[in-house]
Length: 324
Image 1 (cartoon, rainbow, N blue to C red):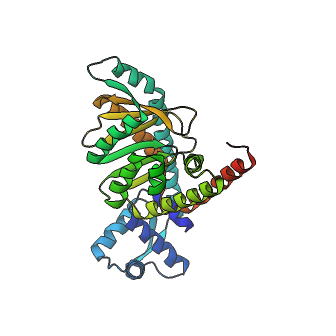
Image 2: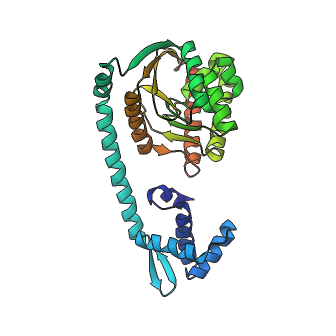
Image 3: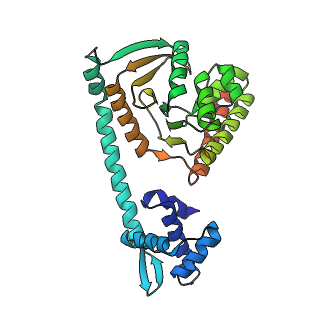
């Protein structure tokens, strides 16, 4: 529903948002939005009985937030102007966060330079991709959180494709985050569909099979969004900069920065061992993460439709030779 898009901008709980929708629906049907009618409608929708103290507490929160008004002794109405004000305030907060992100990103060189100068604090090593793969597997086995920039989330690839590509890291991420659900994964991605297309083409050698593999990947992305709350995927258009990975057990101490050549796959990885440097890199990641678009049930339909359109464009490009 169109109204569901308001949820993330009103700074209220899911239950409070459901009550807001119920009040709007009752008023639309010209039925008094009394506590009794609200409670009845809530039970019909959720099959959960809402206790009166909890109902009145939630209604008070909505009143205090200026999202609803009391129009009678026991009747409520949606406050359209209050909702508009809340959205404008969210926009201003988002703008402020983006300004902070710009400032942090602009200071990234200074952050790394300051701590790289102190060899006692920072260890920096270049790893060939195979060495990185083995090292990262050990970190993921004990990690509680996994933060990564990615052109496209590799966790959506099929186990067969990952095996053929030799991608052991994503295979272990699937085992822990999807099968066991004991690892929290945070993806910040630009959803560049050409990446999985090129990977599939590398393995299957035909554009038709590559397209089918990408369609399967989009289906798995849909399932992850629906079924895995421990996997948070955020979308940031035109994502740029370094591809960073931070596996975190208790404290962030290891930062991995991928080095890419002309090929779709990285040629190596820079491993930075420093609690302070990794903490600052994580702060930058989280600032971008919070300022980006969280992919969830309310917006996944549009995002998946856009990705299907991108896939068709990439397929046509490979077919007529304008992309190679």
